[in-house]
Length: 272
Image 1 (cartoon, rainbow, N blue to C red):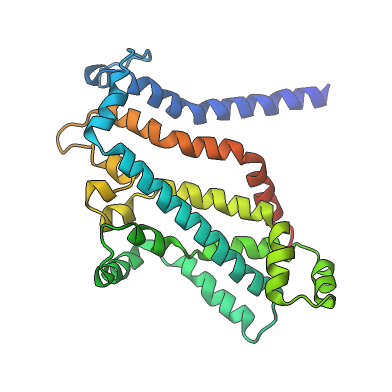
Image 2: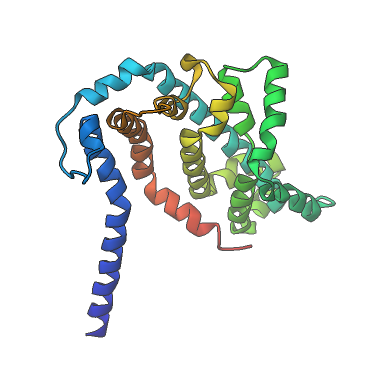
């Protein structure tokens, strides 16, 4: 009897936690279908009012198509760049022997201790000197490198068996061939986990796109939605409708890659 009761208690806690997590999303959907007066009513109403026009207003107030394309290109560029560069650096730190490897890796990880806001002014000056303001390059290039991604994938590479690498070396394969043909396919769960993390971070990035791109045609969705907030009044139903439209692609990607993401995060802690 103890085991079924324990299972019931665990499921009850999980259901309660799920409801807490789903409630803001449900409230977002309900608010997107209200009028402005209905969304700001006190006490609040928990019933939608069927205002589907709010979704059309998003496309009237914003160049939604351009901003969606900018967000997709920025997210794809950052994700591909970080996965490729982080996996190469992680393989070198995990498998290759060279003088000062531990010291260099420690210095590399020290970047994680520096608040990212400190890099904004130097990076902005670099973008300005290169003439990259209001371009996709300004959105993508500074996000191509990640110390966290290197650390995450290094832990995954350390957990892979060395016998495969030694067998490939005996067959005459070099470090680059071993990395690309053997280690990289085996690290697929870790690569997927990093890809999902980078995708979520890039898609929701707000501060940097607001700094470098002020042209509405070159903004991302997060920056464009932020511009809907007025100084004295904000149309919350339209803002919630736009936020919901912007969230759907990320939700779909996460649901599709959920299993690989969980496996990748679980395997990174096998060996330190």
